[in-house]
Length: 439
Image (tube, rainbow, N blue to C red; front, side):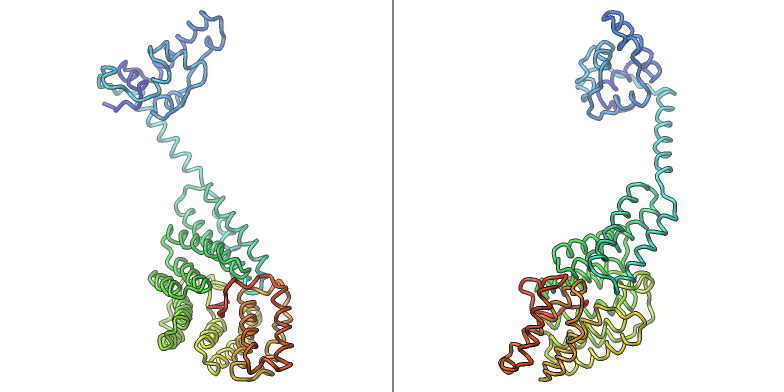
């Protein structure tokens, strides 16, 4: 015997009515009331099968006129009670299950399945979205951060809108993946523009999208972003925890592994654990076993970690460790590698150039630092990201050392740096005094 879902349903079961029976009685009672009141609203009253299903579903609702008066006349209860729970022993029910009820349930099931089957998207629209995300990931290396942010925002909104239009698991998985990649790019762009809070939120969003579809490389990348954002918030211990979490996800290839090791090495350096930082950098240089993954290798671009970016990252870590000679060697290596590419990553090129200038200044070469920094100071304002601005600001701090305080060249360079920072796409983060983990 079905469990009554509300009082109306209980009374219908007790009478053994099918929808057809109930609708016929509803129309008869409506005509009677209409004749009494002289109202065509009641004389022509009818109830469709879907509406009757809703009334007997047990969900809270208030039927519109003329239903309340008709239902009250039919069953002898106010409509508020009919739509409410069945009182104990309110009616005596007999086990009733007729063909009409079974047919109605079958039609409801078929309608639901039909809705699900019709809620899908042409695969070509998903292919286009995937292509657009990949194009932006590759173009990010040479794109203005603000424009890249706006494009990534468009792609995220597109993926989210499409998720509302499909119920097919395969399509949903692809869209969650696209949304995760777009969120990661938004995180990087927000960071480049100096917005640490939104950058962190976008990275967490990306990680959650990756969790939904159990995408190890995406989760690893997002947690790696969270790691270096934690560092920028001057929390290197938290950065180390985040990178250890990132390393726990499966399916990550050699490129993704090298990226995480570079971030881990920086975290060790800022914790004063120099030996562990150097050992981690050594492991990062290991070419690995040839493992690949679809994010770091197949999409690549901003999700990659090519040799120039790795060399830049290690140069900055050596600066943190106070090893100017190795910092300069790594910076030169990065610039050499960039020089061998047709479209070098502009942000990496500028940032590693500042690292080269800092390394030279660390070795007492003021003229060499000035020479290296010249092309950086000519960078257009829209390209002055937080990674670049804070590196240049750190160099300004280095120029304040007593040994350089009276040097005319040092004072002139410091003035140029102040002008550079004053007009930038990003502003120096409050309290930030440390070079970036990566660009």
